[in-house]
Amino acid sequence: MEFTYKAIGVIRSPFTGQGETPIQGAFSKAKGIVELFPEYVAGLKDIEGFSHLYLIYHFDRAVEHCLVQKPFLDGSRERGIFATRHYSRPNHIGLSIVELLSVNGNVLEIGGVDVLDGTPLLDIKPLVRQFDFRDNVRCGWVDERDVESMDLRGFTPDELKEHDERHKRP
Image 1 (tube, rainbow, N blue to C red):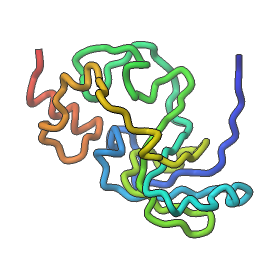
Image 2: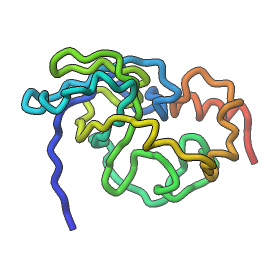
Image 3: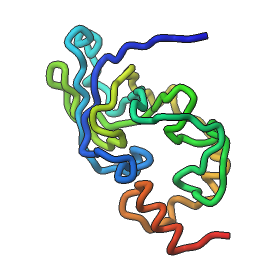
Image 4: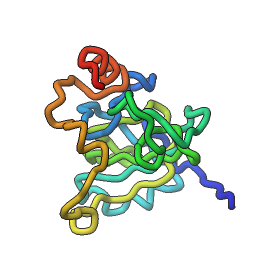
């Protein structure tokens, strides 16, 4: 089966290269904006009441996909692509949680952006605490990395590579 999606807007960020872009919004202090195309502005009604949003977007600069990939958090081992959040996915679909800072017409100011500048936006969904939280979550190989204790400035691919080189893992 094939599907066709249409961009509803563009995500703007300070990031122009994958190596400098935080691997997840939780590690980003960067601000950005979402420019929604005018024909979709009515869909923003009541969005200002939400503190966080899911952005669903197209990894437009990913040129290939790999079913096995070395994730940025564990460059020493290959993992199945569906056990990672790497951009080299079969459908090049990305998902980020961002903080909604303000709404001004068709422009959303966001915080915690982890997306390349100019990325096509496919959809926006509000984060709803009562729907999106789960108890007893296991995070597979990510739990083994002890991310909370890693001494890094920003969790970009470049910084993680430097960290791994300084702290060689078996």
